[in-house]
Amino acid sequence: RSLNNLKERGWPTLNVEPLTQQEQRKLIHSYLALYRRTPSEKLVYKITNASQSENPLYLRSLLEELRLYGDHDTLMAEAERYLAADRINDLFELILARWERDYNRDRPEFVQDVMTLLWCARRGLSEPELLDILGKDGNPLPTAFWAPLSIASERYIVNWAGLLGFFHDNFKKAVEDRYLTTEKARERTHRKIAEYFRKRGKSQ
Figure 1 (cartoon, one colour):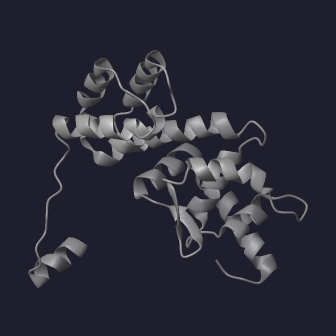
Figure 2: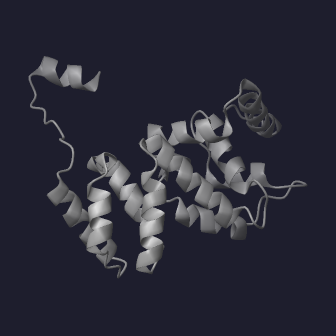
């Protein structure tokens, strides 16, 4: 719709082409250098010869994950595992799975709960609202639980005028595919949000 409006006004448009292999190589080296990582030529070759790396969002998300690993053997193994995801939605699901391993240890299903609440909240949730809903016995979830995931997900969950929401529809779709595949699951989370705002006398 936006593109059609631009054309109707006679405004110029620009087609964003897929990344060339040269552009990919430059991005790989420059991005990992920010974290003092030097990729091997074998790793660079592996990434640039995967067709999905032509997508800037895919490549940036892949590199964001790879920067967490220090040695070359681990980098290659992780790159192969992530590159098995042919679609960006599938890559995001692998990222969600990694978050589950890292952040569900002290609170089971923590990642799932956060992501499904944000998916079901039509206009997003403020951080205090999110922590209130995740809390127990009338007490909000301690910030110590939320802070590590908040930092890890800062490229995927954005703050729009005080409300948290997903930065991209592909990420929202990955959350849906991983956690909300049934109407029952979606209704359960919607009810949780509705009950919270009902008690507060506020619509969502």
